[in-house]
Length: 235
Image 1 (cartoon, rainbow, N blue to C red):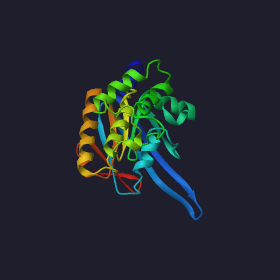
Image 2: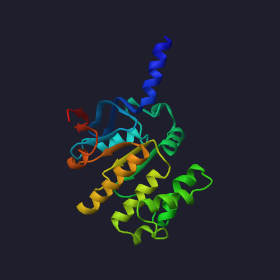
Image 3: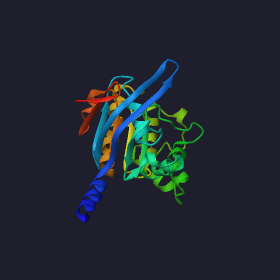
Image 4: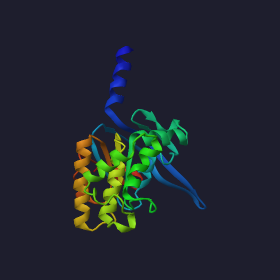
């Protein structure tokens, strides 16, 4: 029994994310729509995983469930040892603030805050005593050390996504979710952002889960999970 418990503990230590029998259904006037059906996989710490599939295949819904932004209709998500379905919204928010970073297609910067203030925000919300020093440091790392006082409207799309990357990594998350991070960028700018994302991810040793329709981008990851009509299919 002790050996079995020890083995389970070791598995939990090496797993960043475990998804078991995950389903998501929403009621419609004409019946029920199944978005995800019986999805299951595990992601090891430090792994880079791409989730691919056609539009409407359930990729973004799966990301929302994995991050605890939404709750499943069935199944379970365990994030860094935390059973997300067993937590209330405050509990899931606490896990996200401590362990998760996000990068979105639409950048999701607050327009009334400067680049520096946007990056400081998650540290301030977490209660860190000094948010400015690490925010300044990581903005310099992404090449925006001279743009700290600029607002999002004063930055190009690529610069805004660099701010978003800085904000995602400044909390030193153990897991980073990126949802179509180059979707609003031209090819050249998007490639530069991807190089920066993978470099920062490598340096930080973060587990990366990347949702994309871009097969070339997906090939940069060590694993590819493919969704088709809400089900995992061979990649």
